[in-house]
Length: 58
Image (spheres, one colour):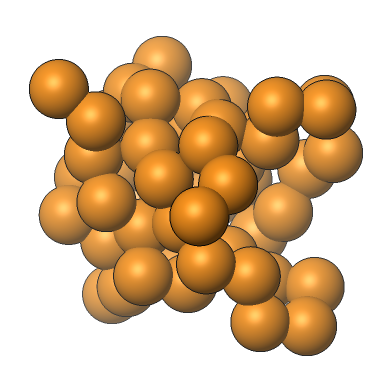
């Protein structure tokens, strides 16, 4: 699973952006994540051009 950081989250739309290890930015839905905290390190799956199954790293 790739690792990244949540760099943006829009609470009103419940969507955000994750920057992966290479700086590529992927959108994600707040419905498919354990956390929406900006700056949180996460691991995730990629489906098409979208991050899914987002899980926080401790």
